[in-house]
Length: 212
Image 1 (cartoon, helix red, strand yellow):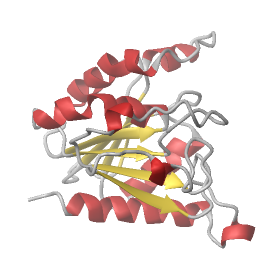
Image 2: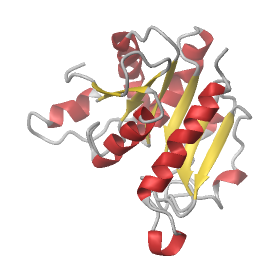
Image 3: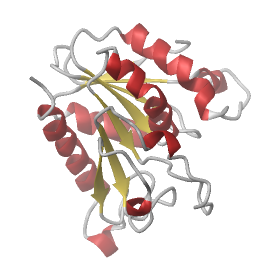
Image 4: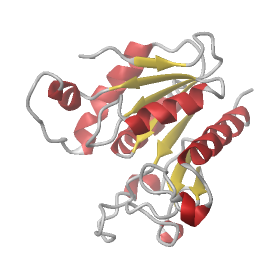
């Protein structure tokens, strides 16, 4: 990878989580950092990496994100580069989770991962509910946890239950959360920290159910 991975959590953690960033913000964005630290607080080893187009922005220029499916080889390369010794969960924020979902079944069948974690899955582009990005999710076999804000403009709680999703997918709905899982405290009574803690604790329980 062009830039070194970022790590949070204990080096001897029993489970590692490899996360990719969303389309518009890097691996060290405030949202990615907060999510990684919340997961690390639950005992996970969390690794973050960047796709080449995003890493290239650090040295000048602003490359637009390519089509998500073209990033599949880079995610596979990140898994290989990480070389996790124990159980591995892959995923990411928004587009990062979407790319992970495209390669998950292949890696799961090979015994390289135990599951998929998506933080704010982009079910459709904002204001374009008919342009669904769910076809490959209909037959997904990898155990999957999607953590989604109820008012996420990429897929709300009113919209998503109507999609034909695989039974391998579980969804944690975070009340009034946006695409970064952030709620409006004056409306919901929850803070961003509350939701990230709930997310991380749910991931810990969910992973625990899948370990021997």
